[in-house]
Length: 267
Image 1 (cartoon, rainbow, N blue to C red):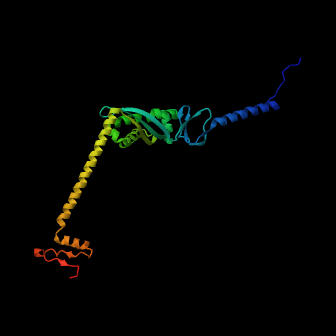
Image 2: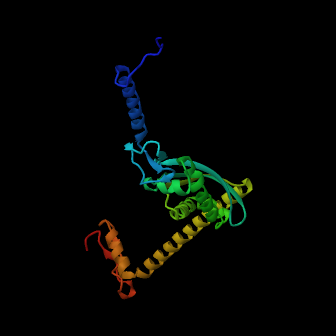
Image 3: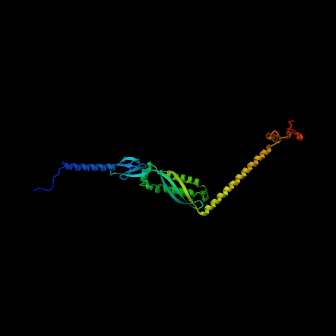
């Protein structure tokens, strides 16, 4: 009785091809799992069985252990995020504005961020930047009255930027490159009052400047008057004389004024 199954020995041609195909596929799979590329502007955090291992991987071709290690990319390019906020001033007035912060995650801190705060760069702003930014904004604006905030907006913006940097330096995860405050919004009645105060201050400054100029002019004339004796006046007259004047006053200092000198005939 014949069997319908064909006996295939391991040493046969078909068996060798199958084994070779399996090995090739396994090798390709291991290779694709072992190699990974980090794009420019990013770093990668590598974990071994869930635990961060080593420092941040730099852009380019990198190697990891297949199936044991996992890769988590973090963007380290400069990010720009606008943040609308409302805050109370020292005199309990509400202001609204937009704070645009420019920041970048420090590449060597990606592993620490992954361990303690966030599993992706999308969580860096809401968990690191935003809380410190809002805290600094409220802290600074609560120190000033509304009028001062409106009239010294540029200086106060610098104070906010410094305070944000101080808050973030406590953790040292990110680098704040710039902070711009724009779009200040206050109640219309307070805006009109601030404009009137600015006009009054400008008028007062103008009046004070005019008074100082008048005082300086008066002092100059007073000094000049004290210095103008007869000798000086006579010299000033001679300096201005054109040589055609018929009569020149006598030299001051003579008692009785002296006799004028007739110069028309060169006497």
